[in-house]
Structure formats: C-alpha cells, structure tokens
Image (cartoon, rainbow, N blue to C red; front, side):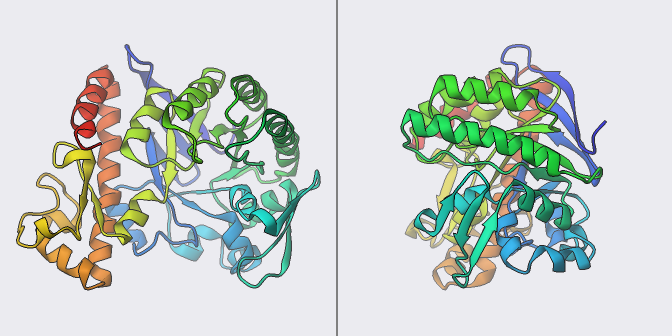
Length: 378
C-alpha cells in the first residue's frame, strides 16, 4: 500500500458523485476537498493557524517557484516544506510543468525536458521528470505530481497527440524517479480537447502505478461545455479506487460540476485572488451569481456582515460590508485579509455541504437548488 490512498465511502445513488477519505502521511481528509493554493509556501495573507480554523486539510505549493526561490536544498535543510512553513496537515506540490509551459517564448521543449529562462533573473534553468521529482522529494510534500506537458488551447490534433504521448513517457520516467516511500505520486491525464486523446490518456495514466490521477489541461480558456465534455470522458476511464484531482478549478459552478463527474480534489487561486480584488464569494441565495463586489456603492451604508450564516472570522465578528468596502477602497491590507478568510471558508463550507448531500443521496437536488439561484446573476 502506498503512502497516499483513497477510500471510497459512498456514491450518490442518482448521480454517482463520490464521497471518500484521502489518507496521507499528515492526516486523513474527507472528499470532495478544495485545496487552497500556497504558491510560495504560503497561502497569501493567511497564517497556518488561520487555515486550520478555516477547515483546510491539504494545501498546494508550487514546484516551479520553490525550485527557483529559495531552492529545494534550503527547504530540505529546514526539515522539509511542512516544517519550513509550519503546516502539519497535507501538502500537494505540482510538478512545475504548467508554469514552465506558460512561459511561451522563454522555454524550449525536448524529449529530455524543458529548458527555460527564470522569470526572476533570466538565468537558464532545466526541468525534466527526474529533476521535478527530485525537487518534490526534497520539498517533502505528501502528494507529488508527475511532470507533464500541458496542451494549450487551442491546439491542433497532431500537436495534442504528440504532446499527450510525451506526457505518458514522462509519466513513466516520473514513476522511475520516485525513490521516496513516504510520499504519494499522482499521474496527469492530458489529451487537449479531443475525445479520443482524452480517453486514451485516462486509460494509460489510470493503468500506471500512481497513487492517484489528476486531470490537467482543462479550464485553460475553452468554452465551459467543452470543458465538461472532456472532464466526463476523462473520469469515465479512471479507476474507482484512486483519487481523482481536477487541477486549477475553484469557482463554485465548476466545483459542483466536477463533483457531479466523479472528481474528488480541486485547487485554484480563485478565492484568494478575487479577494485581493475586492470580491466576496457568497451563497447564490445571498447574492446573484454568488458574489459581492465590495467596491460597489450599494454597500456604503450596509452594516450587515458579508453573509449572515457564515462562521468565518469576518462574519462572526460582524465586520460590516460598509467597513470592508471602506478598507478595500482605502487599499488597507486588513480588508483584503478579511475577504480572503471569508472566501476560503466559503469554499470549505461548500465542499462540506456537497459531501453531506452525497452521503444523503441528495446531490441532484443540491445541484438543482444551487443553479436555480446561481444563474439568476449570469
């Protein structure tokens, strides 16, 4: 048995949505789960104690950024990422592939790996499956990700096919490079926006000796319905006994549609990024489309909390919408922190409620009620 395992607890009788438990070296976490993103070994503006209070179980850190600064050697000397950032729950590190491929003209892809110029100082660097896994072993995360090539959107069929086949070869090399028995390793399904490539990639990655399966290359600019179609094809061919992780998705509508299609794990910068832009994520019963834009003048004299039934620090202490609007407009850090705490807690509550609906075989009703309110504001 590997260091990371997935236990399926229940499938919703009508939809097949899954409730499970992800077992890791730093704890067991109920799924479906949303993982806050701590790119630079910190979730922006939030302390580890606050993250625990919000209900976060696993957080994500970025191999590319930590590879460049401060470097995996320093993190290893500190006792690993958990000790370095004082977080004693789960950590997932991505492979660095998505960031490298996002560099465009600053990188060159070969079968060996990717040569690129650092966005920090322009120096030449190299990442490969072996370097990525070695870096993640030094970081000491609970869950490592195989090094993959993220197919851009749009991409022609031949490019997507060659890229996906390379991802499969790199997946094999990532498995061979894994020398740690105390860390899990997930493979990544690619295939672009082509049904046959998606199905083939899911079969190939699902058959390998990974501890879980991620679905990459989605939510990269494609139409929503196309994304759902590719996601359905991907999960259809993945094994039942392994966790399924949809990478880079964090809006409530995408979360609920991902869970509907059998996904267990999600991550995204969305809740923290929009908080820094002055937006509160709320239930669609509270506001159309589930959002409050705090710069709007309608909140100038609104002395109610962001959300009446929320138990986050901002809401339970009754920091008013008027006060938070003032802080946002004055560019005060505290206002952005209050919104960040609220948004992260909002998603944790949302995942908890989805899990409860699955366990009660009521996920279909939960989803219908959500969209009945959510789509009023779209």
